[in-house]
Amino acid sequence: MNAWFVWVLLAFQLALVPYLLLLLVAAIAAILARQRSLPADEPRSRLLVMIPAHDEESGIAATVASCLASDYPAELFGVLVIADNCTDQTAAIARTAGARVIERSDQTRKSKGYAIESTIAKLVESGEFNGLDALVFVDADTTIDRDLLRWFDADLRAGLDWVQCYYTVANPEQSWRTRLMTYAFALFNGVMPKGLQAIGISAGLRGNGMCFSTRGLRRRPWVAYGLVEDMEFSWILRLSGESVAFEPAARVYGAMLGSGGEAAANQRRRWEFGRKEIRRKYTRQLLRAGRMNPWERLISLGEITMPTMGVLVMSYVMLSGLGVAAIAWTWPIASVEQSLLLASMAVMTLAVSLYAVAPFLAMRLPLRYAGSLVRLPVYLAWKALISIGGRPTAWIRTERVPQAKMPQPTSEGDSAPGNPAQDEVHAGETA
Image (tube, rainbow, N blue to C red):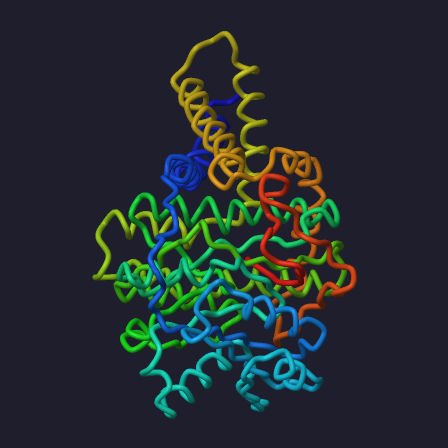
């Protein structure tokens, strides 16, 4: 085998190694991170739970009920539904369920980002904003832990201004797809932010289960309106010197579609192209970020430019296979190229292996979800095919899981993703 082929193969492997090393560091840090307990003292923070909703009449009552059932002093929190450009009975049903409702109609500024911005502006204008300590954002298709607000209160009193809780799947047992997504959520929404926080790097926002202090919003107002507004605002905060904390003990639960189809494809396409827009828009700004130290900038560059997990996995498998073939072809003749290939493959394999098991160790995901990985090639092929469809030109509402078909969560230890404190679960999304 020609030496030039080995060197080219090694170059491709070395281009992949920095990203896999980031996964390795995040996995180790997440596994070793200590889990703190919820403080026993009484809450003091005044919170407003905001639920942006667009045509969510089928599930908004359950979401409002879940929030109102929080184990938190009733006089210290309220629930506000933003009925954004709704054409159904979302507003009326939300009021009946016990929420305050603001109805918004704007055919040119349509998206969750604009709905959040306009509602915060109304709160400021009315003076209500000054009487609050924080805003909590929950998707209109979500149930929450009963102690979610208590965790946010503890974080606020500890001086944190931006907090993201663990966003996981409510219906993990519905199909192989929801089981696989439960595993993927444990990686992206759990292991990665937990690991980043443990090494002193800001966690990212996931859009659902976010808490923003009013003092933080006075410094850095909400200004994100893209395809993935949560990720966009994460980078706006980080580039301005702010830091997002991750609260792994507090959870929100969203149910995923049990099968593919056009609804799932539209959702995935929006996430994928949204990430590309973030990379294109903020990478140069990150290179010039004066408020980050070199360590933060290095890790953040790896994070923002990192390929999707699907691309990383497929690249690892292909390059490892070629590496084994190259070594076998030249064996037993020892060479520098051969040694470098072996070292590179060892690092990649260690990183992929430890990151793959991290959800079970760091997020306490039951081992039975490992079985869903046999379907990973099918899921990766589906993701590759839908990416061919091109960038979404408009926001498309994601189809929801019917309430009547939603499975009930089980007790802790039986199913880690399930919520033992709630009686109903419903649909949501993540990156």
